[in-house]
Length: 133
Image 1 (cartoon, rainbow, N blue to C red):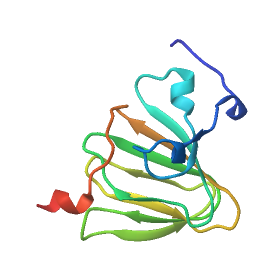
Image 2 (image 1 turned 60 degrees about the vertical axis):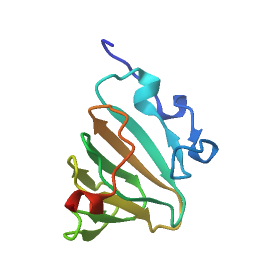
Image 3 (image 1 turned 120 degrees about the vertical axis):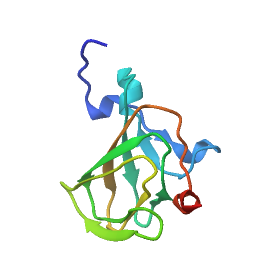
């Protein structure tokens, strides 16, 4: 791809609750896939109150997040060293390979997070506690 311009509304919403093998049951906009990106995953995640992405890690992938809308409670760090951080719109956070991370939406309306992961490997997530062994 040389370049691409895309409006958020041009990215179809995928309801993950309709895909059994993919938790959590959230709506996403697969921006990177729609744009044909090959070197990173880019996704807009939509959250309702109390929706969460559970604490997990990836074997190879770095992940970068940006809060577009809403308030989130983050759980970050290696197993046994986790920290909890409250963030709102405009906040960034990142997690490297084998570093645990997860977040729960604590706001009242819809929350939106932009997630970028690289490399774009199929890396469904590891239990960070199992990395201690």
